[in-house]
Image (cartoon, rainbow, N blue to C red; front, side, top):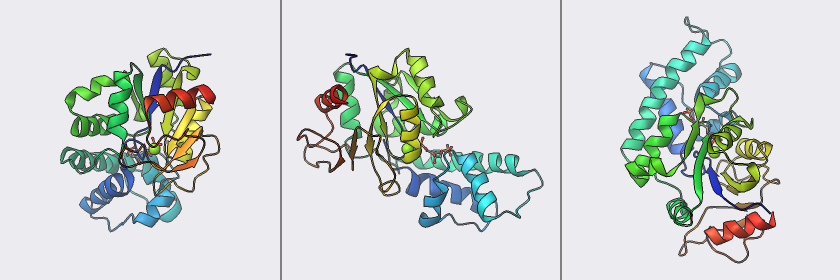
Length: 254
Ligand code: XBP
Ligand code: MG
């Protein structure tokens, strides 16, 4: 029976609620700066989130909602230019401490480290978005707690493709059956499961109704001892927050 050796975390929606009040707002700031009157509302953004990756999301928006928009530079360069500015605004928000980690994430990361579990990140977001988030929430040294920060365009196909998880596994020299993945969305779990990873899901407002039938456990949050999680599916064995012992049990049973 393989031993649990490592935890692989998604970032957006899993470690932090970054989408509604983070990425979405930063996209709108970039559009505004460019003199465009586009407003990605909370509702519209739910549809746009079906596509992972910021550049890909801008192109999806144009295809679906503004098919006649034809920038001189071409759609790909336009999307890349907007995305660069969006990243600038998003990093500023992170630096200003506007985006906290989700409930229980810091406790889980620290206790996993203490227990000798190895840590990695597998995300579609831009690498700097991860390092700035970690620095702002856990301190500069926390970047080194993660053996691998697999992010963004480092793989050709973003989630739901398995590539980013396969890349992280390879970088960390791990087998899928030695790890647990943490995700928050349908695209995320499609990716982790395609990489043969047992996956725990913590939902958020955008992803609550997604299909998580392949998850080993679905929770509303990691939880804290004084702020327990709600189990949405699976068996948490009576625990009230995600602990290393819960992870060991879930890993062994799944
Ligand atoms: C996260 C994303 C990201 C962010 C934007 O998906 O889709 O694209 O919305 O990041 P997941 P960038 O949590 O499944 O990894 O703009 O930096 O691409
Ligand atoms: Mg996510």
